[in-house]
Image (cartoon, rainbow, N blue to C red; front, side):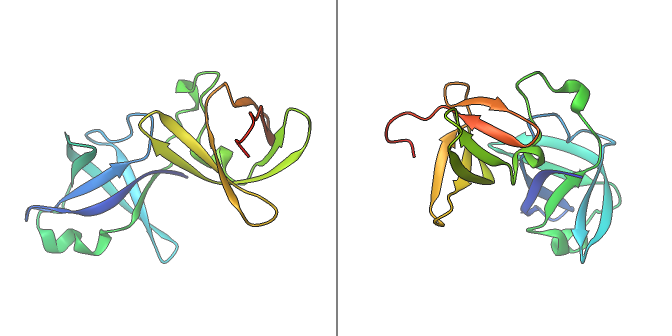
Length: 162
């Protein structure tokens, strides 16, 4: 299960929704199957149409032709089970594979745990919660993130970063 977006609002009266795309891969295309979770159960949709509008996608799901059909899904996160692992390059990672990883410096000093990955125009920031409850942001670029291992992330901090 991969979180790939969030339904931010409806669009017009013909059942379209605005989706904030959280995926670095093309997951929103005609005939793609996506879903939302409602009380822990998957509610599937098939994409009928999709187009870009500013930093959002306008998506029409098959069989949902009226604003009233789609209102209940406003604000929900969108998921996909389709794996894109074959498309991943050596330095690409799934969002979920980074969450909850422990972070250490290159001197083996524990920094904290990844609690969020924040998209920014320049890339992404790792939000790390320290043991004292404070949060720090680390740019997810090679200058700072030297290795992503199975059980941890190794960073090379500079003065003032932590």
